[in-house]
Image 1: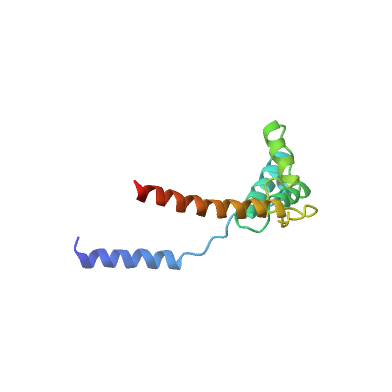
Image 2: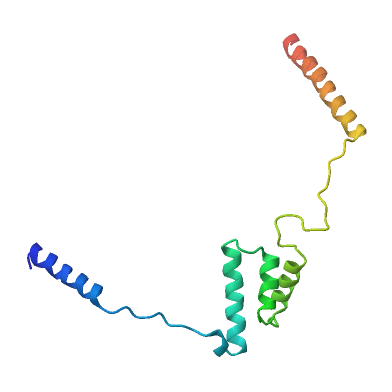
Length: 133
């Protein structure tokens, strides 16, 4: 088969694809799901929302539970769920837990200043000791 014949065959195939009627995507109606299917569907949606950054983990868990997700009997999953609802998966501090403020501590400041001052003195003495030998 020559290059021209290959090109003609390719163009013919492309034209056939373009002229075919479009088929509709299969539509799944969530109302037709049984309890387990609905729960899996909702957990999958919640996971997708977390991965796309639409919801934080705690919000996604609450969203899933409100939208019909069942909580599995798996104890490890229940622990993860409880941790999420308590905000332990969040990367930032939750409401009601104020950020810790660094207060000026005179004792710590004094110790740090003395360490710096004494280190400089020690360094000079050490360098002089090396030069003397």
